[in-house]
Length: 134
Image (cartoon, rainbow, N blue to C red):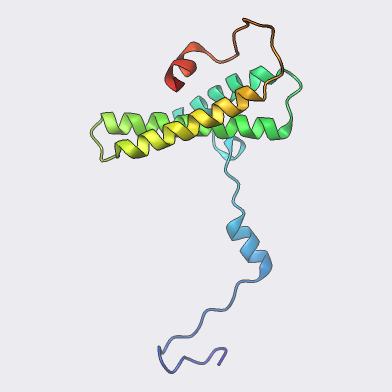
């Protein structure tokens, strides 16, 4: 009954995906390096990621850089949701608040991983990013 129509539905069953095709479908890479870079959102995400990555100095690992990029993307999503809500589009407040909480936790986790700084030294984040996260 491989290519014969099923007697109950009359449809030919779909062939199962090969392991190579399944991997290609499920392993989609999303990050700043995969984006075009011409949109305002992408440039803003790169700016935030660069500010977050500046706290590590030159000794940043690949994992830390990816976390900075992810946090930058999350911050841009929050900004987009908030601006859509203010423009009157149907975006729920709970959706905006949940996304903001995720972005805050991502940024705070990155800041917690920064190398030790002298007491009283300001972090690398600009004031506008810090104000939005508080």
